[in-house]
Image (tube, rainbow, N blue to C red; front, side, top):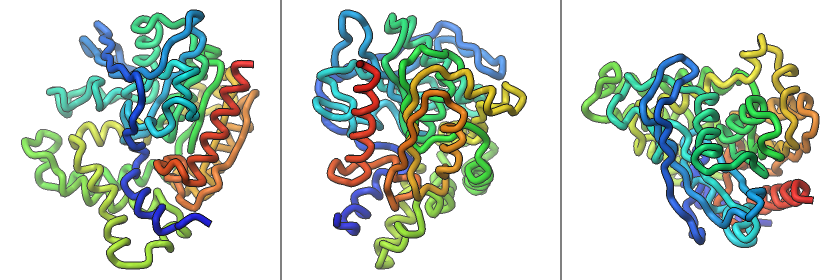
Length: 355
């Protein structure tokens, strides 16, 4: 049996699906610029930036590209623990494009200067910007696969609906497809707590409201873990370290960047453009799909993943055997049960796409 206490201490730093930055060979940074980008709201932005990082080599047929999308608080480096020679995203076989979603990293964000006046963006907006990167920036007409954890899976589902068949496979880790009655009020509460910080000043701040962000992280803390995982915290020191960890991560973010990212996840609902008909929305997906919820997740519970499984024609369903709740989809220890399980499932799924 694995050393639970060791895993507890290691996984604390991986909260919010900001997966560890690992050593990955042949990585190249890039920024794609869209001259004029129109948001779902109708607002426009000149010179929209889309940051990305590539690993591996694109083959002559341009048939081995995989787009990696990240979680709410992630960036282009968040999946590095799974990228490299012989790993799940094998750089000896695949050309990996890890993208920064709108709102942080090297992509355009409120902290570029416009602050609270930056257009409110959605998961749909992220996908449209990524499609422009992939087709116009990288010159690809299709992808072998795309996807990622949490908000990364939200993007992948929207990709499958908006651009049916563009990717042969979709990777959905700790996923959902529609309004989440747990996540939405939780995010509303977190934002309200952050805005109690006097430095917030209605969003026109000169000092980042870091104390408000830290307290918002304390609200978030119990929801990303399971009761069984929390019971492994045997000392007050371990508990206090765990409690403060999400907020420490939040406080490294510009508050408006942070708020907009969480609002995008909060408002995600693929059924909305289809009159609330989830089956109609998911029926647009023609790709093969791998669905992997964490069995102990209460933030994005497996029941939401099962709705995806029932609505998608070519879906494979595998539950991650983890006590780590939502964080079961974000392992950073390569010896952990979660990491090994996810890696095996991704490898088998990708092998099936290339046969």
